Image (cartoon, rainbow, N blue to C red):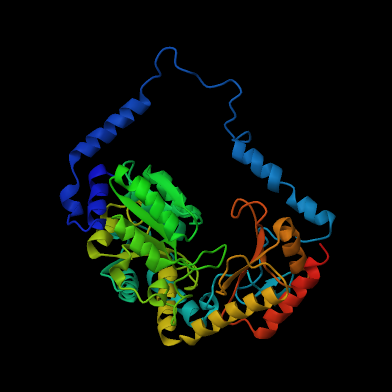
Length: 455
């Protein structure tokens, strides 16, 4: 991205006015070509040369070595105790409230298609119809031949739900976070993140080259202390949190965090990957839950791969900001193929169903509260969760074995281990579904109690 185009979006985020087209200039191209010449220039005399034992295959890379030591023999380990390896285990049918493993349909708590949209016939038909009309791919970046009417339809719908001017859809939720943060901040700026914010945000701060400081999880006082000490040292600052924390199932203290951020002249970005379609009376996320105006948050980010049962991401905000994203932000639109027509058609139909059938959200939320209550009554540690449709049961080092034994007993629930959670806090993570029955939930906790007692 060019320095000037990047600057435009930052100014817009600070509620200034600017036009991406007016900011592009040829000096960047000259600078970039100079960088290429410098890169290709011969090494100076005496410069360090490649080591004789250099391994171009990366087998000696520290990350490769660590991964091989930790996970390389899992199949052997599980086979030795006659248990299935639950990692990268292919399922044989749809991933919904039940899943088929080993030719058997079993209760499933490993799908974040919370509302059942991924298996909804209307959603499937919408995806098929889009393939018939537009093919499997738009086969271009949106800016140069890859635009289709479906994009405008879903972006208009999303902007309306958030009470903002505009939105942009993307092909990847992870990339949406990384590219947004990477575009808006630079090495003179500050990202202040909740300590449990998603890895994609951290990737974005690395892309941006900005300073990143973490505040204690969901603690406005910690955020205030950090900003009081640090804010004056940076040009721009953005507070970044999640709307529903995917490892712990808790909800942000959003009004308090907004108050602290505004006090210190910070922008606010919220990742609604696991809250949109899940929280709020009708599933419209934390904006609905806390009854906030659209402009209470500067950058609303979400995914289409969770409650919407599709794939991709989106950002909603001011028209000027979204236009800057569309014309000048690598990864969000620029230099990236547009999202698959089938994925956008599926997500758009899911949004329509969400509007028409709020009872799906009611049932989902009731199931989250029920499983949480049953787990606590059985003596399990559910951490800081709040009875939402994400319920962790913290088991420590027993988690992987417990997951494998639950699968052997006919229930799928995933183990979450380091580095996704701290060592010692390994857990089983239950994603609830609107179609789960009370009988399934009771059977699951009864089975877990029996399995855990054997480990």
